[in-house]
Amino acid sequence: MPIIKLTQQTELHCPEGKTRIEWCDSELKGLYVEVRATSQGQGTYYLSYKDSLGKTCHQKLGRTTEHKLTEIKKKAKILKAEIALGADPRGEEKAKKSVPTYAKFFTEHYLPHVMPRKRSWKKDEEMFRLRLNANFGDNGSVQKSVSFY
Image: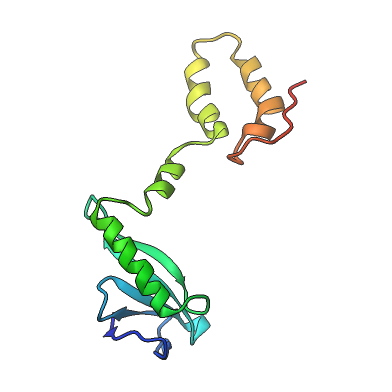
């Protein structure tokens, strides 16, 4: 990753033979812009940081076509301060992904548990398949009009 002083006038290009390159800012540690060969002249700003476990994470800050560098630097400084105080910008995303959908819970946890213990497990499976899965299944949100019968 080449380290340069990023300015609004910095020419963003990807060298021949590479699919992408990351240009790091010499003034603000962790700030970099990723430029891909498919979109020469524009890129995406990121902030790299270490989370509480010491793992390197990358937080997307915005596209070069949509934001000025001064805005991105302000945003990166605020984000770095929040991280220093213990915040995890990607924590909410990780927590949301760790919660299973109703369909996943039903098929991977509930059914294997009740099949050897409950004689009417087939009725539970039928109710889920015919009535509940359409509204509560893998889409992660509840439909507004829920009709079971």
